Every structure is written in C-alpha cells, then in structure tokens.
Length: 364
Ligand code: KG4
Ligand code: ZN
Figure 1 (tube, protein in one colour):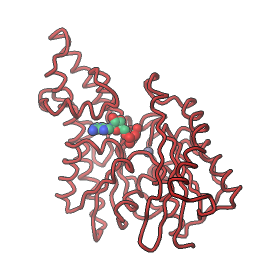
Figure 2 (figure 1 turned 90 degrees about the horizontal axis):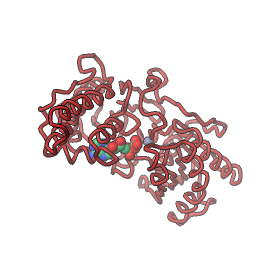
Figure 3 (figure 1 turned 120 degrees about the vertical axis):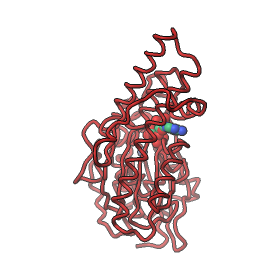
C-alpha cells in the first residue's frame, strides 16, 4: 500500500453535496480539502428534504464539488490512490448520483473504488480527528439518527441501542414548530430553554423503565403538544414564559433519558476493560450544551474521557468518507468496486435498527 495514501471522498446521501481529499502519511492524517455544498435553500419551502430535488441537485453539483476539492488540495486525479463514495444508507437518488460519478472516475483513471457506509464514516471520524484507539463508545445523535455504537474495529460495530421511532433532532425540530420557533429547531429550543423552568411541565421519560439502551422520542413530542394546548386553553395563547418553560421541560426530558441510556451503554463498554476509555459523540444534536454537559458528566462518572469532533466533521461531510476508505485500505480489507447503492444499510447486521426508526429520508 502506498505511503502516503491519498483518497478522494464523495458524499451525497441527503442534502449536502460533498467532496474531500484526505491523506494519511507517516505523521498521521491530514484533511487536504473538505467541500460541502449545502442544498437547504432548495428544500426550505417544502419543510423537509425532497428526494427528487436532492438527487437532481447532486447530479448537477457533484462534479463541481469534486473539482473544487481537488483544486483546494492542489492535486489532480493522478495524485490519488483511491476513491471512496457513500454507498448508503440514504436517499437512493442522491446515493446513486454519487456512486455513478465515482464509478465513472474509477473506470477512467483505473483507481480502486470503495463503497462506504455513511454511518461508518460518522463512527470512524474520532480516529481522524483525535486518533482514538479501538474500542470506543460512539453516540450518534442527529436529525435522522440516534444510536449507541461500540466501535471495535474498522468494520466491527455493535449497536447497543437506539431510537425506536424519531431521532432527537427531529423531536427538537417538531417542538420548535409547535411553539412557532424557527428551524432548525435545536438551537432555537436551546436558546428559549435557557430562561425556562425545566420542572414546570412533568413530561414523560420514555423507555426509562425499560432495560437496555433503546430510546423513544415521538411520545415526548406529543406530550409537548398536549401541554402547549393546555396552556393555550387556559390563557388564550402562549406567553413568553410558557414557551421557555415548555422548551426547558422538553430539553430536560431528552437530556435525562439520553444521559441514563448513555450510562447503561458505558457500563457495557467499560466491561471490555478498554485501556483508554472514551465516549465520543457526533451529530448536530451533540451541539446542545446542557445535553453535552450531562453526557460529559456521565462519562466522567464512569471513568471515561469525553470527546466530540469539530462540528463541521460531526455533520455530513466527505472527509469522513475518504477517511473510512483510508481505514479500510490500511486494515487490508478487500476492495470490491462492484457494490450496489443501498437506501438502508445497518452497520451492525446482528442488531439492526428497527424499520421506521429515525426520520424517513433524513440525514444519517
Ligand atoms: O447532524 P445534523 O447536522 O444533520 C441531520 O441529521 O439532519 O443534525 C441536525 C439536527 C437538527 O435536527 C437540529 O435541530 C439539531 O441537529 N440541532 C440541535 C442543536 N443544534 C442542532 N439540537 C439540539 N440542540 C442544539 N443546539
Ligand atoms: Zn450523516
């Protein structure tokens, strides 16, 4: 295997058209470029990502993203050692756009082509940013996903639990909509919650009484709806303090269940006796300060370090796809360019996510 190893990554599984070049050499890894072309303006009027619009935009933008990534890295196609592309899970039209472009480039250049699981990209990112050693515990908590992963190797993931319905980011976004706060809902709800009373509304703590690490957020969102309607009926509308109290009560419920399930996941992880125990978090919801503080405290109590990649590498990007390709090449895993694009692709096939878990057509 060549040293250094330089890989082009391509990502198009939701509404970000992304390309990046990552190099791994004797001194470690370096992101040479990381281009993300955001499509959110195209979808804004529809209240969510429209798969057909996303696929078309990817098809139009992908080659520009690749050109921009190569040019920012100061490289040409002949300087690469391989191409890595997201092969799933995600919106199939977008995934196919990326896979077709990557396959075309691989055929034209003769470079090896790797089909990467998008979730593996997220899960392996702390090794790119912090050089973490296996095994570590990863909590992926975003607008489309919520799962605890035991990461034991480049291709060895055990899903300890996750949401059986909505993802937390999705719940934050819906609560924001219920309270007429702007999207994305997470930052708006967090800001509003800062001046609220987290104990005013006794919202449920879903699945807390059930053993294990599974979570549920859809009932919580409905409970916020009922609490809001109760206040509206009583006061003929929402006052500012009501909104802040609803946000604070909701955020406290999400934080409490995630922290408790995280404590249980850590217990299982710590039983492996890792030499340098680490809890890593990724995904947009990990930006929530009270949640982050609660997770940090849980990790500390368990005797584990807490880490989170910088936000630009926590959310969707192609550097994580290039990195996952490098990891696979360095681990000597077989390279088979003959893969298919997959809308669903659980990382851990022995305990796959429940069908319907997480927002449909959402980012992973
Ligand atoms: O990982 P990400 O950028 O992509 C998706 O999965 O879509 O996560 C976006 C999600 C949104 O639902 C957003 O409301 C949520 O992350 N989010 C937050 C915060 N910042 C972003 N949720 C709670 N608190 C925040 N501060
Ligand atoms: Zn993702």
